[in-house]
Length: 338
Image 1 (tube, one colour):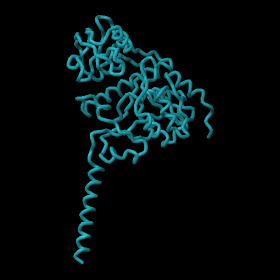
Image 2 (tube, rainbow, N blue to C red; image 1 turned 90 degrees about the horizontal axis):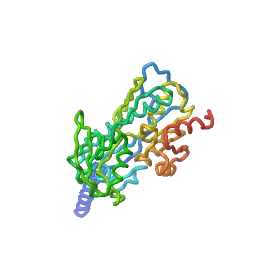
Image 3 (cartoon, helix red, strand yellow; image 1 turned 30 degrees about the horizontal axis):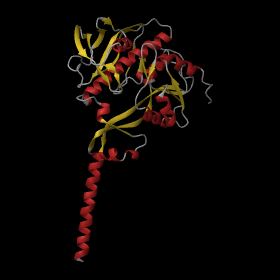
Image 4 (cartoon, rainbow, N blue to C red; image 1 turned 90 degrees about the vertical axis):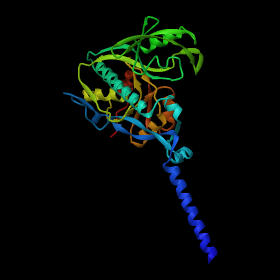
């Protein structure tokens, strides 16, 4: 009897330990992040244009986001427990010294800019006169381990290199490309209402050591004035990847039957030239689209499209390189069967 009681006590103690370990694994955060699929969301409820006469029908335009959060220890050890889960090291998501809050603010700025550009592209495609003037390369992130750190700050706009004007991001890349790693260049900056000039030393690109870089991430700064007021309320969604979906839906709101009865999801950053740029999290987005009963998924051509097709199921994936190509692809789809 004594032996049975002792065995029962040991078994109970072991169970308590196992439950405690499971709880720690399930709830305790790891040092990594996890990407998880989210369902596709209709864009129509987010867009408001005064006096618009939206096209109505069985289809619709959808954007798709992903869940990004700290992974628990269990998720870090067993990511296959969740379909589409991807574990991402913190260093791949956040530059050294950049906090989650700072990253969220950056995502919000990118979202605002993508909405402005999307609205400009849509209105221009509908024949409206849109004022959209590139005004420089917007600094979005600065690595703390490069000579430019402390001299160049996020939200600065680079307007010149060695006195030569920078209006578009391509101008910046072209002017830097004439230098070598180790060279010093003078950058003209617009910081709020001030103009500044700083001298920075270029460093080798980690992916191509012979190519010089400043050690920053940039986007397109632009002055945009729209002939109609377009409001897009994306809630807590950040980043620029919904730009293509927003542009398509603005056209729908103004009466153009873009979707032609299909449930169309779209992802991709758009620039003022109408180019569709690659985005991250395509695997999770494809799975989210597939779960949402979407018919067609427009994605940036290249690696994004190749990855999306691996997880597409019955969803038709259409690679696009530009906003105009996306419009043409939808316009030439066969009639939707009802």
